[in-house]
Length: 517
Image (tube, rainbow, N blue to C red; front, side, top):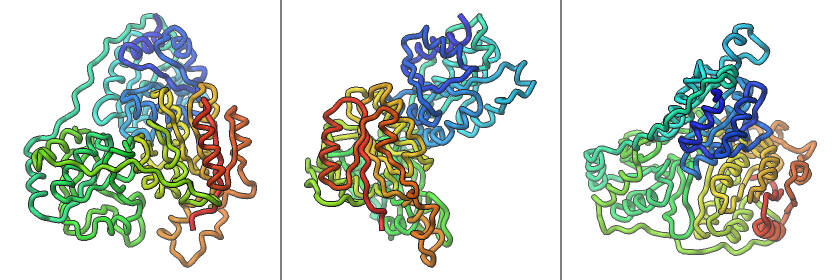
């Protein structure tokens, strides 16, 4: 058994079922090993950013890692934007990167680079077995390390000679460590704070975005009157009728200041203290109001759901959360706008859908339009690196093949990883992609007002304009093998969305509307 096969057999024995890959020459023995280990499904992406984003989506829905397989340092570089998003989502991934043998590295060949240094920026463990006997045990360690709470990217650098040489040994699976719990004294202290009568806000995120955490937060709100806010970008949010719904922490400092106006206690569970996404002149970076106290109920990586549940029980064991009733918005009519597309989605969203939300400047209407829709999951891009929406959909669809996936994607983000459509078609995944096309970088026009000011019209800046030439997403999708259509009215979007949901396999709808005013 060579080192490559030892790695794949170890990962299969540990729990890896999927390997998302865009391999090259240094990884060919690992590709051969995928042929000999049928327990691991290989999924090809045309670009490493698709590969890494798909691994993120898979991890969020499967609750365990997939593997990636990338080609040397440049392949890792191509995948870094969505590995950044993966890290920010705290998704577990075993990130395999091929490398030259040591004897070849010293010759400084054209594709030589410092892979370990680049992988180290992901803040997860980096391993490089030096012989086939160590490859399997290192793979077992990488899998266990990926699952370390709250989840991390464990990188395994595989030299080509370690992959092709005999003497590989299958590593024994390493049990994952339990999620650290919160000290009961901390929960009791927060209970005292909430009973003290101060005006308080509870900000929840991470695993607390699932139903159990939301219900516990809703019970705390019911018994104390505390205002509950979701972190701005939640890796996996359960939403819809019967699930407690809360506003998200806003994007801009002045908006957060309004949400937290007069607050004396900011309590966080499963997420970090509110921080501005960007720095703005004259605005703070930490968004906790001056004079307010910060209370940490559960650090990121601790069992926030158990802590919230224990706090709810301590405050009032009989409390019940407020639950949204089933409700659908009426189907809109007329030309598409930055708001009414969301009502089409809310009116037609199927049961148990997985919604990928990378709508950026158009997202504000979606939560309200779907709050009474059938229960669904929402995955958002968590790190701010654009272009993860359609790759996330690939991973989610492979992790949950019995559930429909709906990708809501801004045109500015879509073009980064449009080749994800090819993988969707190749794997025949049940994904409905809706490109919200305002033919501009509308989010940068918004940011212009906050960072530059109102003395210059952002509409006049050609760097925010995505016309001339206009991108034709219908033709591009068809070129990747995905049936596509275009909608300019709410009626057209409703008809095309309904049809795409009924038909198996991937589809793309280009929904065209004016930029946000």
